[in-house]
Length: 207
Image (tube, rainbow, N blue to C red; front, side, top):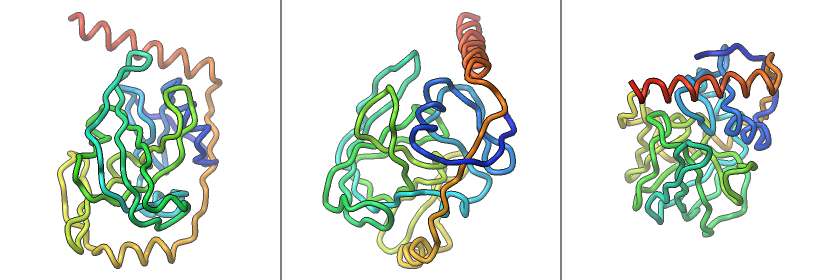
């Protein structure tokens, strides 16, 4: 289910609201389906993720996915060791937690992979001291040697036209510009729609 929005701030507090009430963001900048609660949304272009991601890191996935259920939805926390802070953080050589939704659009990080991630800090009821990947699969890249691999909509790896050095240069030469966004629905309307979606999912499971 897609909803039209007006652009405002892609901030961590709004991400928390998105997760908690299952808001569907979309339209000209990004879209998603409410089949599960997701921590971010798909963007219409990579340039938007590039410009609006406050944190970009290169790191190595150090742990397996620690899966758990919150509010009837499945999530996972995975530890990543930051080896290069490309934008917005001084956490080089530190371990950070990445929070993901268990969904096709948000492929879990795999232990041992070297990755390039476009991130925002997560603030909300699910966990503390964690980050989320902007754009879901769109902000998640694997690094193999000097090459980087992105995911398509079917979550299949595809070699990027830019190599790692070129991508880092592009990121550093792109000014960070935060998004701001308002929804045309009240919190009560959003929560009601989310509850209705949950009921539909339960009915489909029972059938």
